[in-house]
Image 1 (cartoon, helix red, strand yellow):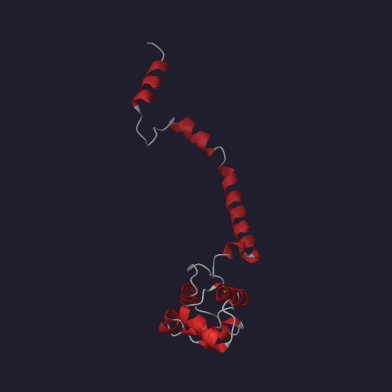
Image 2 (image 1 turned 45 degrees about the horizontal axis):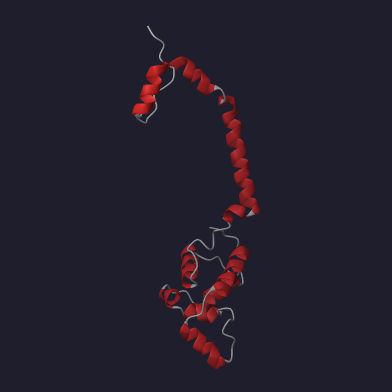
Length: 153
């Protein structure tokens, strides 16, 4: 899960924008003269049952959104669920973060460098041991074909 506060902040704002308001939230917005399609407020998010049940307050959400604190993974999972998003919403883009991508590419390059000296090793094993039988059983038609290819004695 990404730990970059700025990225978490962006995703938290996006989660609130993507959240579908409940009927009660729509009624409260109507009474307050707010647009029905407005982004979910921090307070509305904090009032959702799942968020409230996990002790996540509007203050905690606000501090996280302002990048003043590190969010716990459980908090982010609960917020994603409360917004109707995947549990993985806050870490779905980790693979595409430049630093992480570069790190993964470096690991792949190192792994490939380690494998290069092994190229051709399979041929050495085949010369030493011969072809190994496959794990799958042979069909009757494959057996007949193989038998027909055997040279006569």
